[in-house]
Image 1 (cartoon, rainbow, N blue to C red):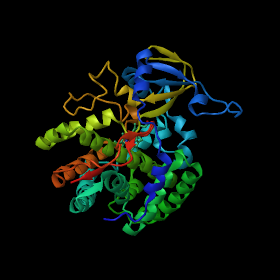
Image 2 (cartoon, rainbow, N blue to C red):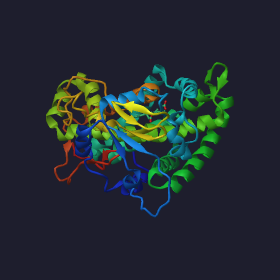
Image 3 (tube, helix red, strand yellow):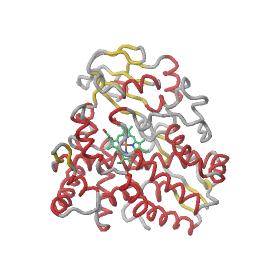
Image 4 (tube, rainbow, N blue to C red):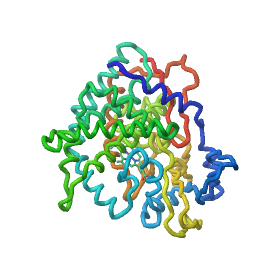
Length: 403
Ligand code: HEM
């Protein structure tokens, strides 16, 4: 399989130079206290001359504090995203509060059944991953990020949506442009509009002639006599790209990085495949693809014993919470043999990741295929300084391997 377009290049260049290791700073802050006030002007490097009203803001770093915020949607609202990601996605479940959120999530969840997951695994994910890994095996070397972990989650989503194969290059370009909104707002918004028009042309025929794809299921889904309207479906489909593709690309890359740089653990996994589920969870705990999410405090409240004011921005640092020494021994270490404990990388509470079973399935298939077909896989010794980088989003830029 060849990559017809190269949206990776631009995305990659724009992200280059990211923070190499924010964890020591977070550990130092967490040791001083579970919650800290944040100076947003300094954080976003805004000059004093820029007139802008910034809210009070806090960062939550402890496991206790993060779980408290995520489990209390009454005190901590998701409407923060309406002012940010809402610009490119529309009014999606990500930015809804209860009870609206519960209702629409119930409708959308109808598309993510165990049966649908099994079908996507067998018909979509496995053949796609196998063909990519076979190419790398035949060549004897490759870049697991560029060839496998970056392109495959977007292709899986295109397949789940039932998009025709010939639309994939264009779809992939818009998808990457949409997720580039953090550093290129104009491009993100333009891609959002193009995707809306494109989805409109796909949705209309599926309303009348449903097929076996996710768009048809969303078109037919109903709860308490209500259905999703077109704009609600477009908002969800646009959310799927950053939520489902960028995260899985990064989490599977981070797991592979952990294993390739801890070869004793890769050997242990090769010797005992039953370790795979816990290896996947440890990768997601140790290096979550997305380290922080946000909420508005709706009232004055204490988080892990620290008071925060009403209408303040709460930065929920899942990366720091996942390495809280009050919960994990040697939290900085990647260790697939550690006793599994609930982490917070998929969030908790009502907004718990809707795609976590899909993400785990995709990573399981990718790892099984790699273990089966690249039995001698190792980091290319000629590769220079392979590392994970980034602050809010983290992943290695490349994983060159010999096999
Ligand atoms: C390892 C991979 C993934 C990670 C770490 C992850 C993480 C998260 C997190 C932290 C949230 C909560 C966001 C918030 O409330 O602020 C979330 C929500 C969500 N995720 Fe994932 N995600 C992953 C993969 C996926 C996949 C593959 C899909 C595809 C279906 C997906 C779809 C969603 C959706 C739709 C939401 C919104 C749920 C809601 O607001 O009720 N995610 N994810």
